[in-house]
Length: 299
Ligand code: ADP
Image (cartoon, rainbow, N blue to C red; front, side, top):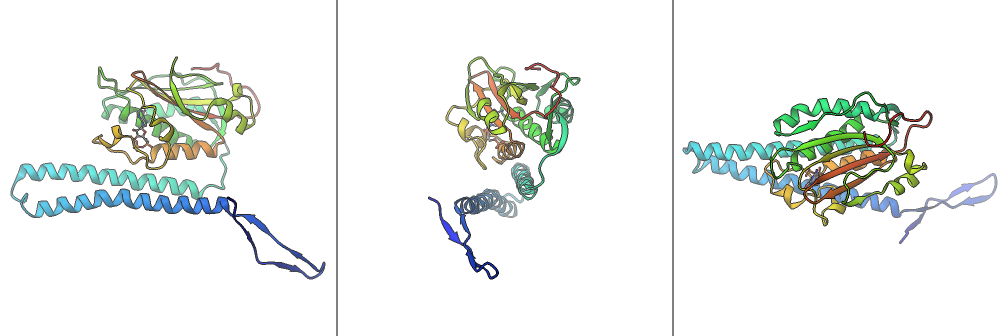
């Protein structure tokens, strides 16, 4: 329900009229609500690892003091937890920086194909450490849009990070990650469950034809995503049970950051998953107005 408030009345003496301003406060209240939820969640996410760190420190000062094996074991857990908090703080800072820059709209003339090439190269060492691989792709095509280059790189990085983390195939235990770009609506799998925005919806919002949309997609060949998780993935702090049991525990903020950035670019994300075949995250954007992109779909 909309809540209205009447701002202080302004009296226009010259005209002898009163100006009454009525504003819809629903949106403002929702934003405030989101902000307090966000802070509460962030606090909770930090409090848990901190409490456990404190517990381990006490253990190390107590009975584990003279047991080298126990000491090494506890230190390892403490290191993993500290690293997780570090990621959490990094993601929180990214999100709030994004919100601060809200007013500055993306304005660079960027080429998604070049971004894909740069990110494949940047993420190669991460892939190696994760015992995964990023499949090579073309670097001499051109898919142009107006965007913020650094933010689009971050989108691709977050998606690749996830694909490496969650996309390992059952048989080889290695993740194979595909980063592709193209234009027009295009399915990642023959038969898949999906959630998020359909290209048609995205095109309506962006004010262009679906066939004009451009996209960057990150696909893996892992186990895919459970149907029940699909619609909630981009919520802040949402982590699936698979993630919670993962030693490299995530923050649940990676996809929220992706969604935020894609939204700022008037785009949308389509998440597709085919059981046992993998997951694909496709970020669609309106094209750069002007000359056509010179690459057909699916490259
Ligand atoms: P996190 O920091 O926990 O990875 P994200 O917001 O990036 O947070 O992802 C949210 C959840 O989505 C993760 O907990 C993970 O379970 C799931 N997820 C993300 N990417 C994939 C993928 N490629 N395959 C399977 N599950 C995924």
